Amino acid sequence: MLRRTTTGLVFASLLGVMSGCSSAQAGHGDTDAGTEDSAATDLPLAEAPTRTDPGDSAADAAEDQGEGKGDAVPGTDSGPACEVLECGGACCQPGEVCAADGCCTPSCLHVVCGDDGCGGSCGECGEGQDCVDGAECVTLGLNWLPIPAGMFQMGCSPNDDMCEEIESPAHEVTLSAFEMLETEVTEAQYEAVEKANPACEPGSGLGSDSPVECVTWGDAAGYCNRLGGRLPTEAEWEYAARSGTTTRFYCGDDKSCLDEIAWWGQNSGSKKHPVKQKVPNAWGLHDMLGNISEWTQDWKSEDYYSFSPPQDPRGPDTGLLKIVRGGSYKVLEWQFMRVSRRYHGDGTGFAAKTLGFRCVK
Image (cartoon, rainbow, N blue to C red; front, top):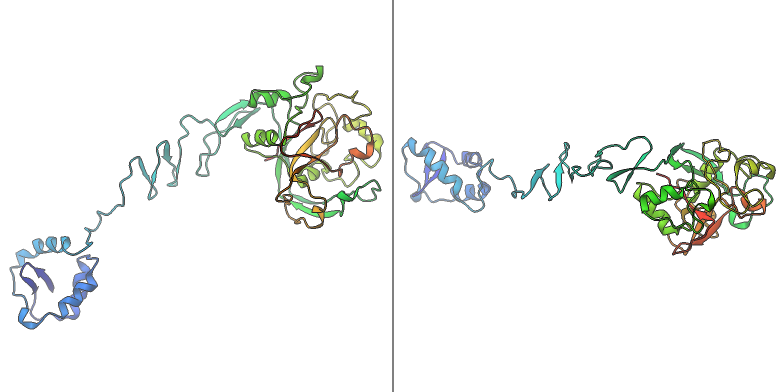
């Protein structure tokens, strides 16, 4: 076998053939084995190495490992040393821990709930509590109801002659499953998270279970985000409100059923009321019509229904006005309480005492 000494190249056996050189060199683990094999075969016979004592082989092998540019001792190259923690071939940062699947994630040491950053959880909140900011369990009394996946006809209800142009064309929409708050967010629930109550008419003499209002779109969206949720898309809102119905109101086509399900201009006394005092729809949602109107996620576009995607539409990409749904305690005309009726508000800072929100996730 061919090996290298301090005086040159030697043969372990003079009967060795040059074809064995490459495999012998590869056995040393040299990264430049191909280059060195080529040099060995080009040596003139006059420089052929002399036989050495077999006992030198171990020392020569060690010398061979350290010779040559870029050669590394097998099993010793483990990459850059991690200052904090090595995890799955990467280095975790200060404050991170290594999850079981080799993923660096923020430490859950001072966090009692929320995503651990690696697809797991830092913990679950108790009944009646929600995880705020992905870190703290707060008792809010929010009730998230499951809304099943399905398809519905969005826009003007069949045979409804009171529809406006912006409610057309009616079109089929398919939605993925989601969860929605049973009620509009109340003053107490808002204040428990934001430490402030923006209501223009706090309580209205009826207590903190009244829906919070005078909330801008940005503040409403921010509240939902802190709970790990968001505002509903317009399609999600109408689908949830209809709850499988196709009529003007989710209680039927006749305006006489409105008093049973909604606080509106004909029965509210021109003031908001505590949530959950009216009959819910088929999916258990209260006050989807009446009490206060609700912000949605979508920007307004007059003709969006003409080109919106059929699967989980998210509204136009840009705009100035946000879609508002549901009608409020101030609405005196029944036709403005229909489930397909579309309102709007300035998404950059507008707030009103008849406008609040609920969240989905």
